[in-house]
Length: 470
Image (cartoon, rainbow, N blue to C red; front, side, top):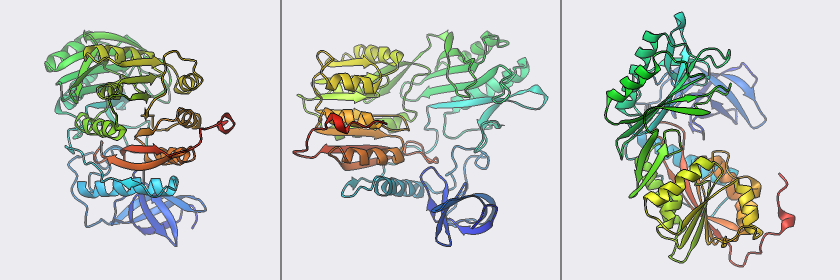
């Protein structure tokens, strides 16, 4: 097999990340598109000793299990690429991917893998979406979503079935306004233009919507009139803001913010608690499934009224506060100071005592905690971690093990890094007891998991000599 070879392949399954998994002459081949049962022609783009990668050239025979996608953009959009696979089959595939990651990457065995928790709704479930502006012909600012596999091509959105109807209406209104006022779109490669992103968060549990326009500068023509029209579109629009991002990074992040309508805040309600947050703060983007995920994490923690729980990467304190309702004390650690301030406000809003939040980088806080350098820092009985997709740094694993909690609960958004960290934890005398996958994002390749690790009885305490240097 060589690069540029054209192969006829039958798709066997979906790999972690959503690529089609096939085989040719005993070698695994990953194709950028395809569903189980498809017969495709694909051109080899990369060859490695144990696998190859290929680009779909032609669909020769579609799988008999394919169904018609609801979305008209399925052929071009990079988001809901699994729409043409029945939802039950999507869940089955994700279940296999989690098991494969834990067994193949983590080299783990003897654990219990619970059945995947399907999403309560497979459409209109997403409470936050980011839409991108891009220069189109004639200088019109095109507003839409990125074409699959690109950062510099955008297509106009007629409808998006995973977000709310109000969010789609706001996109359409903004597109019309941008064309009428001659908004100039920011070009991600040339770094010219003005408007960059439109971020819409619409929370179903509280019926509150926050809208943010992200631009390279504040001089957006008709900005106040646009905000007025957005606010008048629905009484559920509680906040409209302008976010300024002058950097070259092509991400919907605001370096500074100007409130155009409301107070810039929205309210989320999960499992009986209320969480007030800025429109840009992190919240789980599937509210209904987030409740199931968090409830599973609290159950996995197995807390008693005398326990101390340490929650790392706590954000605005959602899990910390839920744990604090059961434990004697809950401590949340977060590096973003604004998130910590919001977490403290959320604790007061919900009248929850026995909880506190620490601002700081996780490794540094854990090191101080283990050395006894933080006053009033008892050793935790349970540690909860909810890291970003990159997972845990090896030193974080070491420092957590150094605290010797009896149990670790790991909330993961990436089965591959969960498996890697599970292997590292096993080397620190923590055994994976069980994992439960959650489908937070139907029709996409993303998978969340709640994993429970138990400390091996009589295990020795980690020594400084074992501290990773990476």
